[in-house]
Amino acid sequence: MSTDFKIRIASVDDQEGVTKLLKASYPILMKSRYPEKHLSGILPLITKANASLLSSGTFYVAENKDKRIIGCGGWTKEKPSSREIETGLGHIRHFASHPQWIRRTIGRKIYERCEKEAKMSQIKCFECFSSLNAEGFYRALGFKSVKNIEIILKEYCQIEAVLMRRYF
Image (cartoon, rainbow, N blue to C red; front, side, top):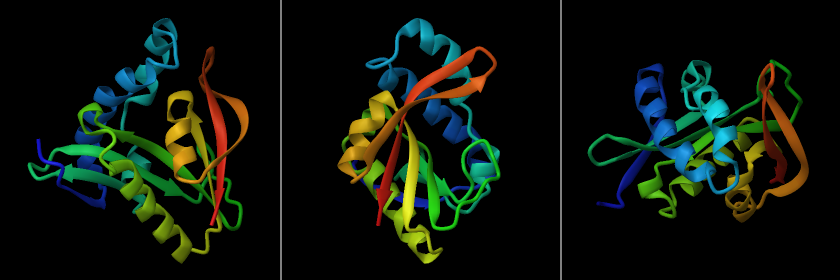
């Protein structure tokens, strides 16, 4: 398997490929920190590509040389699940790498693209709602853990996470 990949802005045409990536990634990578019983309830809710992110212009995919999506992630000015915008604050959104491609700089390269674009939009700080298993990844990028949180996905369904922040 080649380690070559290209990062590009996602589009709504990537919905199927991003969903396929999320379904391959999250069940495997999250099982180290979440009980399987809990994952069975949340995975159907978090393994679907978000159409508004795909059309935002600030969401990216990494493709291998065969044009298969092997990573994704992005940022928005709007806080997740709301239209709230705070001046200078951006939000990291829906990062994933295919399990066969982890530790090959895909996530880091996508993050670097996000930060570069955000700085051009006068963003001074990123926040993210990190899953428990991704906290180390974000810490390696310079994020600091702020507090443990619970994200309500729908009535009676929530996920433990960590609010993290990085100033730049």
